[in-house]
Length: 154
Image (cartoon, rainbow, N blue to C red; front, side):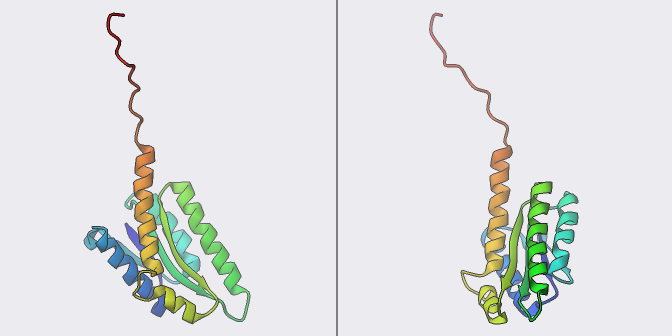
């Protein structure tokens, strides 16, 4: 597993990282086997996720960041591209991407979602990534050969 997080909005994103790590520990992951890589900002997350997914080194990716609305339309462009880009990575590579990128109107909203609580969005993204690994493993299992019922004498 790899956690990708942004350097931008570090105060918020650090809380998401802590939440993801704690949740992975609760689920039995060894943090020594969880790599953490930082990227400059949210826009860079899809490229880093694509490289991580194609490397074959990771069962899942947890992408963490925060896009906070400002005075320009920059927010809409970044939020849309990050969301779409991470979804494409997951679909095209088959590697689950836990989406923990906050898209909020105000910094206070981001702080609430990154706080140490059961609603921490980093923890939610980690849970989703692990759950999808299990779902995909179950779906990829080869079906058992069908057995015909045995009949006596015929």
